[in-house]
Image (cartoon, rainbow, N blue to C red; front, side, top):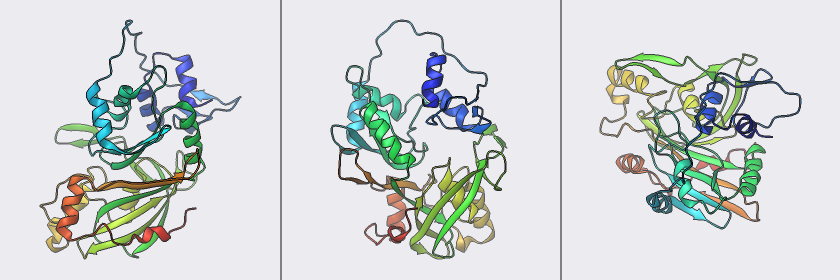
Length: 330
């Protein structure tokens, strides 16, 4: 049984968004180890349950889906068949609900529900990451796609604009990641970073992460268009990996801003032009996987407006050959 279903049976008033958050923070443990909501439980395992926010039973009422959500989802749709839906998630729109998130893809999917059948998210993207997001239209398809992701049959390619030019031009980033300090002081007070840090093998909570990268084009020494292929799916993996090799993703408030400002002060000629929008320049560009009903699903997302503006400024051509295609899939 999946962990989220285990919690739902025992704590009916528990919001799945809250469960996802406490799992990401490591507050829920199975046999002492960090877990995700999709983790499958085996008989005899011990689940550590932290204090929970249990919602009071809602008054009997019919939840009304907003018809505008269905129209918005239609505008986002890159591909659709009777079993699944592939969306182009916009920048700034959360995948799931959480603290302060009142509008998100998961909630909008309610507008596509038919009777007891409701579309289900297969994976998630960070709020400020744009691009390909896969949705199953029924539980059976969700289970089949979930197994494809767990067995690493899904090939994912991301595009990013990074500060500076990585050397070598193609490489492999293999690191252990763990949750870092949860809070940081800022001018507005303390803020929750939920930031990952590089850890050592064997360290508590450390999980292995692996990414292949390749430079597609560059404006030396200022920045580079990086294509990245993650073979694992850790929280903030690509953002943490980019920072770890000394080339954070442009516009990243958690892993990039400080480095960017420091470079601009010390060496203006190496800094990214100030005219660019300070939004996260990270796109889930392409998803390729075997379709459970046969054939191959291969979907590509266009650049979001702020990244297209940057690509135009630097003269980057999206039709240029992407060398990450030659990187290993395992």
